[in-house]
Image (cartoon, rainbow, N blue to C red):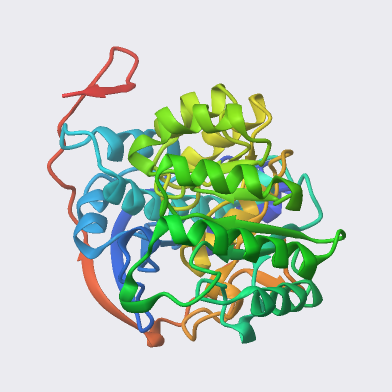
Length: 409
């Protein structure tokens, strides 16, 4: 069934969802490199398309050429509407558990599958997920004209000015990195010296946003536990919205519970983590106030929904790290349906790149939902370079249980 006859059948049925989805098959996956490619793998804005034999193409973002092509082999020939089955297939295929980089690529393709399903129903993805639970998604960051973030060696006066500008631009929260406070010469970061400088910058941030605004700081794993604890305790009076990544990622499951016991500042962690298994115990034990999980890093929308359920169960908010603009659009669909506290890092995605004439809708420091089908993204492929194509299934190493569900080979 082609796209025109399928959509005609839906229209004849009189309502979205009144007609069954047609039999469909994934036929081709292409990988496109944008002109402004982010070379950091887990912030990748690589674009992928998933094509079907019913004329609907899904758009996704994330991963690298090699990892997208490997994951794509698990999709060819599958029904694009069986998203959970496909996710499990990508996850356990090739036997070895995927690392975070492969999870990122799988997440980009998963986003494309949800885009296909939304387009098939003629509805935005957030409607398929239960509908919006909020009017808009608030963002934190800096006005684009101010450089996006405060992670230079800004002194207290400059921090105060930028905090004021952030509030004036409509953002909910001003964000800065722990590099603030004073000059950093030859990239030498003396943590013992920086503690006092960071505390002074935090005081200035509170003055800049006033009591009506919010501010946050990313310690960015720069400090050992002892120095991170000193900072957290001494900035309590300035009431940060959160302190992000206060300890090293490798030690987080040991150090965050200790830090939670000695400070009242709200803690956030997990921008470098992958799927729900990284977050599970920390969230379950309330050792953080906000999870930094994001798309496509966790494995796409399918996995994000499970992390959202975990966070809602334990009253933990979600404050996603930024990746690419299509992933940001997908976050609106996901987190718009999340009833807990959330705020998105908009970063450089305040301005859309040339290859995305339509993507997320951002204005006045907020991301707004829309009613465009699927993810609501339009692509100008003339502004992209196609660098990969997969049309044949990959080598599959899985077994099936008697009921048809998947298990390891």
